[in-house]
Length: 114
Length: 111
Picture 1 (cartoon, each protein chain N blue to C red):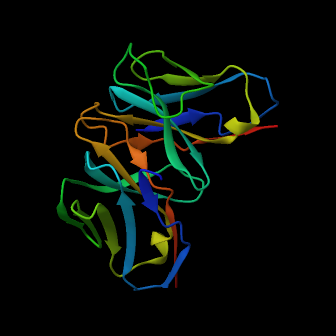
Picture 2: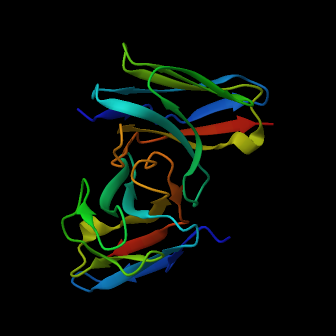
């Protein structure tokens, strides 16, 4: 099992450009999450999907959109990137919302916006 | 004030030492308390979790939760160089997947 995979690993964008971060899991999990990690801030939840077909805002959703493409895949889109979105982005999954305390994380995407 | 406070360190100890990592929190609704380990340039991995108060032991690792003081700890016995990583505490309410993380403590275990 690959677990949770993310693409790309690294990305540099100019202000105003758009991009989509891809995430896939092969553990047959129902719930998926997107976080950003900034120095001194810890991980903060951007959006989550409790199950296929549903998405909800987390702590810091502004400037982002998500799509739960199917049970395996959950993408994060930046429509107009800003320097404040420079961060490391992690995707995670859990068997269910009720088991949301047991999350499995991907390797991350390092995004720089200039 | 952040909901979860964690001393960022860095913390450096000799091999074989007992390590104590701590977090405090302000939201009394938290019921699940997690410790994640994150190696450099990798994603976090769940070490262990505790539901409500009490202790939990897993090999060299012991997690403690004191809800009356809103204080959680992770102890690592006989620390090894392979334990060198950043340790993140995290918490969530019952039946709720919105975890709140501490900023992480960077630990180095020197041979």
